[in-house]
Image 1 (tube, rainbow, N blue to C red):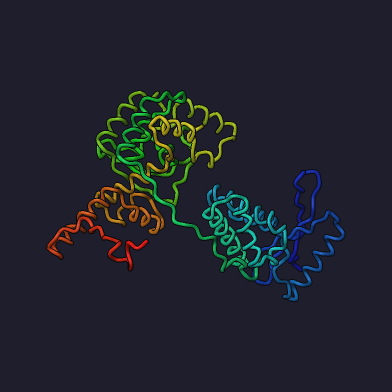
Image 2: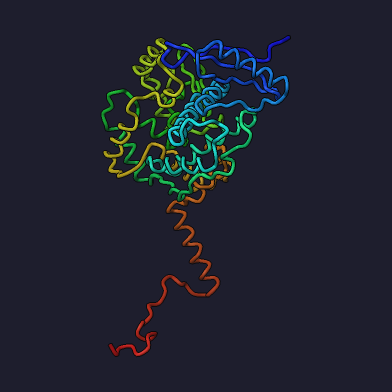
Length: 406
């Protein structure tokens, strides 16, 4: 007779002991791995036989599984199928849920635990948007548990993340952009990063930081004056990098940016394939890759002290607040200001959600506000035959009973 359940051993976290694990396929055809929590062979064999009897009777439902065991199982199932950053987000969110409600059985998680988790995130200092993202990650994990048959009901199905006010889209004005480029050209950079070219390309293309830093020379078509956003594979000269939302796209370059690129290429050492990552840093990354100390996560920003150096440029440009991503916001807003349609901007920006693009459409720049004001004034002239530039000043005493008696 074929065995319906098998015993396996699983090393403990310290690597010095082990516990038995029971593996079987339940009546719904779902594979189960259940830690028995002990190293007693006789007891484990007895539990295995009991499990087999229940399986043959068709009464065995979802097996008990703690949240930590569920996380381990889920990460093992999806590793290699999703990005490393996604696995990290799932692990972080679930560990914080365990920290909040305890390492309870998966079946015992309730809606109220989600509410407690949200409050714990906010108490920890997370922004509402961050808490919302963590809730979405947990909801995806529990949805997978339902699909696998590990969970009867989705406890967080109707859980909503905390609402937050819509953040203002911050852009750099034209004069600020000129000051940024001037500061980048003048400031001393010990790491060899060409900040002037990086900022100019960001303002021209709206590319994200990770997209720019992972751009190689073959992504540039000098004849067509375009630059591509494309994923990278592990090779002798490049490291693995994935595009956000998996959106490949081709973007236009201006004459000035092309000129800067040509000048920069002429100064680059032979064999340096990355445009913006300095040659010395590429050599160091090659050493780390050879020692298996380089990760896909680190490839998202392969340049050290990036934010610190950009803050120095902001300070030299006399700009009180800002971040590198504001270059992208500035570019997208300019596209709208120059008449591009929302769908076109969505494709150029690489947005997967139209609502993200629409935020920039609503973030009207000052010059468009002036155009709207002029249009409204012209309409009033046509409608009323007079220019209503300023409302008349009213004498409040004439509107107040017994005015002047005080």
